[in-house]
Image (tube, rainbow, N blue to C red; front, side, top):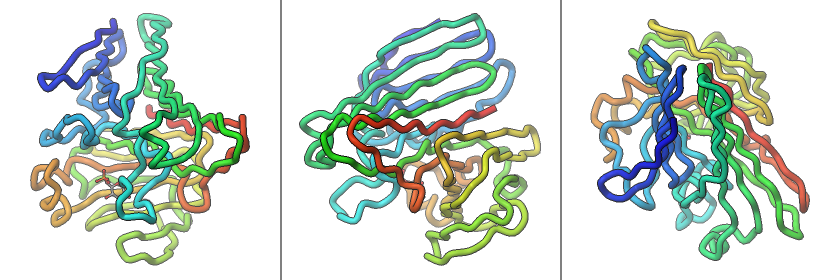
Length: 278
Ligand code: BG6
């Protein structure tokens, strides 16, 4: 079942329910902000202090960072690009079976995007909602010049207690620690006991998130970089759209094309960044 709904402030979203799971996706940003499998707690974290305002990214869910990941060299430009706050259009819905629903959302270059990023593009997000959750973000270069993108499927995972989780699959992987700005090498599983903001490079899929109450696998395609982020106590307390202490119940494991994993697309070329969460 699919329903188009509106929050009280007019923010439009799509609610999907099938035999395996339910999900909610805002048209602003093609931002999935809820995913829950039948008889389980939500797998994707959403801040209960999120604003849900027009022009502001939702805190939690899976924001789409595109066409740049992180800070832009110019401080006037929005962090993580403009796709997460742009209004997308719902292109197709397919209720393939009672267990799986597929949606495609699309964003085209518009005059207002040109001053942020002067390229013609088409961006499509294909979402499959079922026992697992798949997001496939396809960028097509519709321009006459090549362009380069960095991006991320900025997935926020709900965890029972940040201090007891571990992430497997990044052992012996180099990373840039963006808190200290130092290059490091991961030894053992990733455990989080302080602010963590890292871009792992040369990553081999899959990763496994071990939580006391479940194990989540994240497989990626078209990606060789992963961002792991938790703001910890002080940064969380400074963030207006996260309650103090909310850092304990979330971790971001972001399927990315960041740093040397940026992708350059020739005119007419396309690239797909995929995350399969199960
Ligand atoms: C992560 C970045 O991807 O997103 C962090 O690595 C950043 O540096 C975080 O703080 C949240 O970003 P924002 O723009 O949603 O507050």
